[in-house]
Image (cartoon, rainbow, N blue to C red; front, side, top):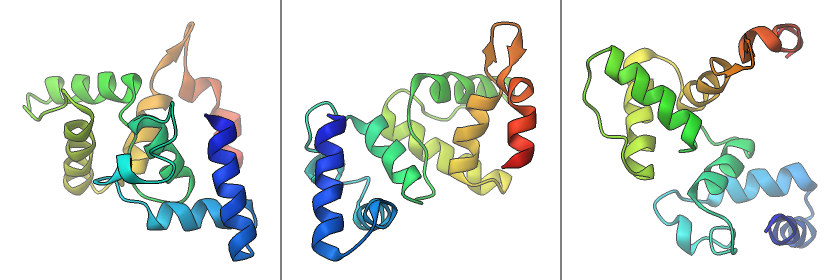
Length: 137
C-alpha cells in the first residue's frame, strides 16, 4: 500500500515538475473527504479513511483522522462535558471534531494531534515524554 501511494505521488511529481512535498500538497488540495473512495489514493488497496485523512493532513489540509485513539479521547471529552455528539462511524467523528473546532477556536488538525499528546506511554503522558522536542517544533 505504501509503495503504491508513493508511486502515485512520484508519478504526479514527475508529470507536474514537483518535488515530493509539492506532489503531496497538490494531491491533498485536490482531494475530497466526501469522495475519498473514488480518489486515486483512496482506491489503493489497504488505504482506509484513516490513512487517507492522515495523508491529507500531512499534505496541509486542516482535518482530522478517525483513528481509535482520536475516537477514544474525543468520546471521553464529550462524555465529561455531558455533550451528546455522534462518534460511532468515521464520518460522524470527523464532523464532530469539526464542530468541536468551531466551538473551541482550535483547528480540527490541532484537536486530532492533541488527542495523541494526552495519551500515556507507560507512566508518562506523551506530552511530557516529548516536551523537549515540542519546544523545538
